[in-house]
Image 1 (tube, helix red, strand yellow):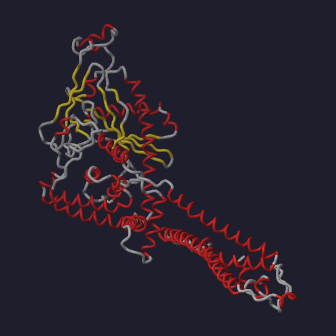
Image 2 (cartoon, rainbow, N blue to C red):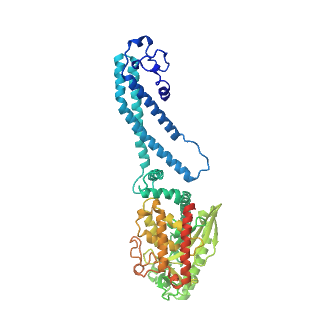
Image 3 (cartoon, rainbow, N blue to C red):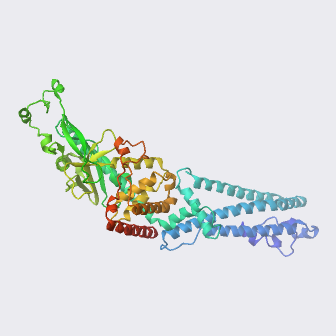
Length: 584
């Protein structure tokens, strides 16, 4: 149609009879309704000739430009493979922007063309009817029908595009349609549009293009996927162990291990290391039949924190002898009668005096793992290597190039709460084997689970924590320090403020919180003494009302350590800037 308009309709010899004669033209094969030359002298000059000629020439020029523009958009020039991700994204955004602009121009052009040409086409049709030309009567309505079809098709395209881009929009944030629209707006701003428009949109695209540079985001997503796979395998192996131990120890005089609880960074959804991740689990211990556990707090103050001793107390089981003659009451049966029982004595095996011993318990658990492994279904495809440890049980599973390191901690629950005393070591260089520090790992894991349930989809709070932890390599700050700061911020900043567009700002908030805490030489524990701690997580009354421990108590006593910590805080800030700039 474009070639027809450009190549033929601008020639007077090929115009319809209503527009006038041409003595020098012959019959055109393209238009069969050319006026025969003998009739030319008998037709007067029609006033619509110049109007239709100008109209058709204008339409031909516009159609040519539109086809050229559409060709450039739909068939862009090929580029080299050396373009980076940022350049590729900019080209895609530019293509979408041009496609949207072309659609808008087509609508305006077709609307304007129809409005301005309807009268001309009406005049043309009236002239053709007056002249009685059959082909003009048929061809002109055909052209009108074609224009109506094109206009209808164009009107449907913007609605479809809007549905595709807006699919899934809502409170979730971070969906692809919203990000693409924001990115297009940012491109317009970069090309010289109003700079004051929608700073959140500009920040979100800057995060994607300049701050995290896309490969950082891809690495974070891959790392999270790796954590999910490792957690699933760890849970499967530990469930197999616990099922075996339950059958083995249910009628014995030893503590019965309960189902393992995943704790620590890997089960919270982040990890300071992308390789060699350690999956920590806490195995609650219940006392054997005829015994009970009684917790005694250490009041000496030699070791910071809340530390306990687990005193094993015998319980009378005499009423049960009526049903089972083999049950021996440790309180009322003579000691020589208990010696006749072939089962070893729990107090002599796992306790030091009357207190449960961490190191003896760890050695006992190693023996259980070694004996149970051949009976587990995972032993057919995985190899196990027991790793040395004094206060826990560590082992590594390997299968080809896959590997999994598991750390098993032991604990005793405090009442019915989410607080335990565990076998984890204390901050002191030496921890007595009968001392069990209070651990808040289960409560903190449940806090992150609660945040994940309440936060919008694709929240970046765990990615913030992961980036912060990775930047600590070689710096004396512990990952628990930064984790504590992030938990404080999560408890105060609305969860809607942890999306991708707020990524840089949340990192800055964390560094500001760290710097101010170092200046004050005080960082309060997040769980102990926190009156704003979520009520969904159960805490003992004394933990709620206790004075929050100061995690920076050492800095308050050592000026040299405080000066070093301030220097490392500045170094940490520089590292974060480089990581975000380089996307690593």
